[in-house]
Image 1 (cartoon, one colour):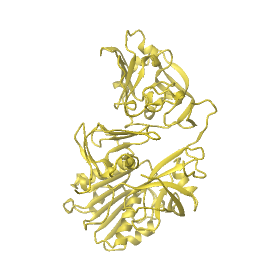
Image 2: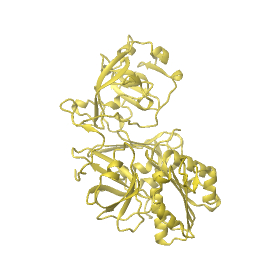
Image 3: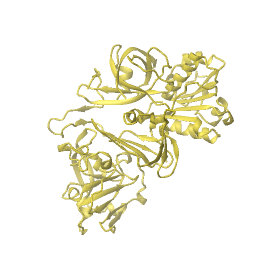
Image 4: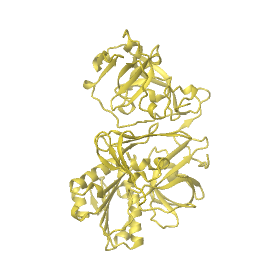
Length: 240
Length: 89
Length: 201
């Protein structure tokens, strides 16, 4: 898979520790919602580091968007989320992965479960759902540590204002006395409330840190969802 | 079974240089326990001298990939059957 | 090499000044690389065995017995095939000379076996004469699980994949048998000073 050269068109702060990077990528072949790219950074002495990032923008958008959460002591994310300027070039390859993808070719309901930065590929799916006017029911369950960590909060509220889409955000850390929304981990009760019975055969996409993914996927299968309907993507160590 | 930070999705970029098809939707049958599932769900160890994909059920090493500058080595002896997507005949 | 990312530094490292093998750089941290899940063997279940070329167990120590063996403090440089090196790392361990002791053998090769299934192979001669240890201490502390504790092989004159984590024994062999990485592209011997990283190097 060839490495392409992308140019940073814009950087948009999302939270105190997360930035969305908009990239111009000549010869971009297009992508599906849920896919990712590999980024490669090269230092002046030739040292290279490579990481995978989910594409946040839906298929068909003019620019490629990635949302990077800065990890304390991370090797790559502090550079991407802090030092990149408009006009900088960066190597990337992709789109990668046809497994963790929602194309919307059927009307089956879709349950999305994201932990921390795992919400990024699910955001691409939500944006694709909105852009195509899909009639499938779609519900995002998004677990974040604190209100300050929630990505895309305003846009999620707008997207949820639609008969076919719903968003439930749950915070897992104590504090945030101003938060009127849900608290606690994503558990069987929340998944049953937000999702659909296994007999309906909904698509389920689970993304985030490994413990989140393992936990939620196991719960969905224990609830009776066919394992083949539960797609998972683990992100390496994250701040989410 | 301990959990791991990465899965087969994270190895897909490296494996794309080796296979002509999308490996994430390929399904592997573990040579040790017979578990069959998409390669994307295998447990991946990518912070290593090479990439190692292990069975999500029993931990058996299914895939090993080592890349040098102009050569790569691939060991699939931990996979007894690989189901891959092909264009319709 | 195409694009250079201005301002990207990556993990803290510096070029060595003739102190390190070709193609390496020095790091401040101690990277953790692994081919599988971290192993957590309870000490009461741990033992270390040496099996000779006839398949006979020639020696065995429980953890308590192992810790009564004479141990040394060693300071060595280590070099990973993924290009990082650390100078002057401090370890505490039992010399493999002590472990092999008076075992009679005509074996020329060794396979180190580990919890989790990892293996690596070496010539027996490279484990003797003060070149190798089974190390249980690093930096003045007990060796952490993610760095191979309770004990790992330490063979600093070869690339660090030969310093097998979670080591549980040595098998003496008359025939060489490539280990986990040696069987899938990594060099059978692995001398960092001759940059023997891959097959054919």
